[in-house]
Image (cartoon, rainbow, N blue to C red; front, side):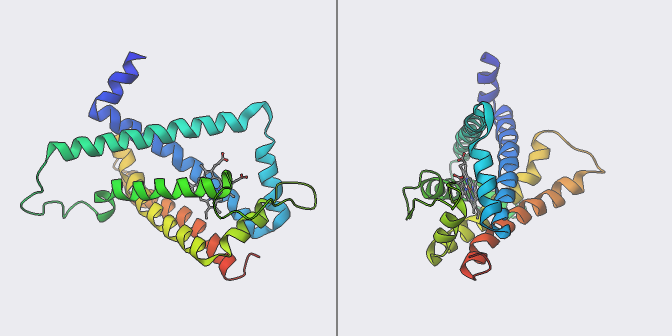
Length: 225
Ligand code: HEM
């Protein structure tokens, strides 16, 4: 285990940890937002999908949740540690703004990450633990957890929908930088594929976030009801 501690302590190792866990979390977000797009296909499609996940055999759901929690914990803890180290390395603000070359998204990673963390705490309280803005229980006519009606009831409240749309836009910013710099951090560098890493990956990140943002908007406008 000592190599893990050494890896985490070195700044390059810490960057690796942030990149690898970030990639894993992005894979989760693709699957999660993709699954939620089933809301467009109606109550039965959404609730069958949710029931399938809840009834996964061999405790797979809890294994996946555990893995997600470890990845998330490592990502947040290591990214904050790196941000604090970087700040300590240059305690006073630069006399001249020499960060013009760095994109806006790259300079605001800690801030956008913190907003996503706050969103996630609210999101889990809302739809997973069901202790915030929850008016259930919601059970469908087959006796299943009615995730469809729960989400529609949630997003019918404009303030909640707007909060989700804003969170998706902030997540888009966070991913647009994270996904383009990840390959550089991991030392994956190839003249032929670099444009893909730097340009296409952020677009994929944005596409996933914007697809997620359409869900609350579709409920608000009555497309999903
Ligand atoms: C508009 C977009 C989104 C919708 C409609 C949505 C919807 C949901 C719903 C309904 C649940 C509860 C599922 C259930 O209990 O069956 C859930 C859980 C969850 N969501 Fe989201 N979500 C969205 C975006 C996100 C984003 C962007 C993230 C990550 C940054 C996220 C992370 C999670 C996590 C970690 C859980 C807990 C999963 C579990 O129970 O193991 N969600 N989401």
